[in-house]
Length: 246
Length: 334
Image 1 (spheres, one colour):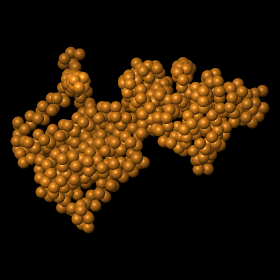
Image 2: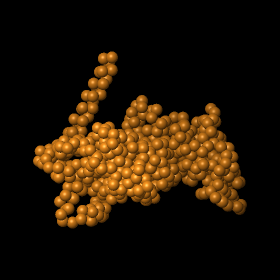
Image 3: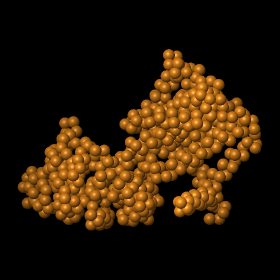
Image 4: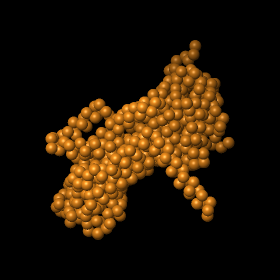
């Protein structure tokens, strides 16, 4: 199995604000886990630190034994970590095929593109995420649900071993969530390690076998969804001090 | 050995087939039509004055296309593109005037010199974006112009008079016209092919969403520098052609007006479509030739620019092409 991601004493300060405070955890290869916490807990910052979009104030991140702390984002992608964003991003006026092609042209994606052709590779990804019938259409006219699928498609173009999904269900209808859930499950079955942050707790807690909880930048719990949901500190973080559920 | 030859001929046939099938498309046929007209111009007139209009248009077609490549295509806003025009002009002029080189290698030197300067300009631009980059590049072009005007630096930079008596490419107007037009066509084709290639997709993705491109595993820094290099190279070629047509290079080659010419011509033709810049350049100079006795051309073009920005932000080429294609489809009964 082996440890694919090792985060040690990760801290990120923005001026006087400590967004991530001495955070440590490990992820095993092939795992499927979630990161939960109330709004502002620091979940996206953790993702930004792992994917290289922010540099930690202190602490280290090791991926597959390699120290990736402070590396540039594109280098981290080409080592095997891909991510999606909480606020959907896309190449607004390029076709969906072009959107996915970009990551297929990354150093890591090229290993596959060279063998089967960039267009073939990008098309196969569009088929995988269920958007191939809109391949020539630009994201600017597409609904939110399709954009969430597109983001995942763009992420898998670089053939990642670890996929960080930042709130992939937010803003989606129940059917759209189901579609994304099935897609993520398929990716996991194909061997991709998946790390999801969530706000739509019900969906997330039934999906993943392990959950890490954080609050105000600090680690507070790590275990099965049942364990974490019944953890006193977690309940206090979400519901405030008091008697909990009556 | 013969197997390698077989593969080579297969590739050549494939390329020929691709070109033939492209020529059958609307865009391909139209481009061929325009090319034929361009090369027939010398049959209508051999005067240096009239051919000169088209020669200057060819020069600025390359220059505007190079700007379009950097700004329209890759999103790196340059308001000081005349820097590369001037550097190319001076570099070429030095070699044809003082080293007695043939114009072709001298042009290449002009392109390479501008390419090198473009790398220098590109590096700080990695951290500056949008309007700030526009201002910074504009300020830089004015600064460089002052450097070349400066008397104290005249011993290496030639000062206000610049370099004169630059030998032309040819003394025969028709030969000159053909050389300039062919170089223009090749430049436009090369820039367009780069744009339509996979590398072009990467450039466009950087324009659309730099962070997204980075998150897709693209070394955005590397590709930005490449965009500056390619753009600078062709702007330098335009500069060399400029120097050999006007038979001199002066610090005025760096003036902001020329930078704005590239922008105006691209806006007229259509941003982010390389051939749009060429169309814009030709419209600009042909129109100027008509207007020059009536009004101040710069005044007219400022008005045209405002009208275009208000009513035709995509430029004229794309909507015109779309209308034409609709009519064409209608006529052939699709």
